[in-house]
Length: 68
Image (tube, rainbow, N blue to C red; front, side, top):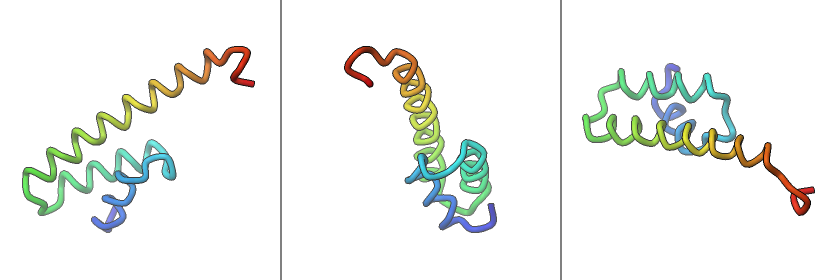
């Protein structure tokens, strides 16, 4: 991912992009000239995104009567 602005956008709107885009965005951010504080922030954000996606996949499989 060439554009740091796009990488940050991907991290803040994760459900609009693929998992590959998320991974490339994280790599672009880690290789950028951002301060270490921001690099750590986006690394932790990436982990939270993956956790939320995994949690949502589990919920989709357990939809009951009221889930449609």
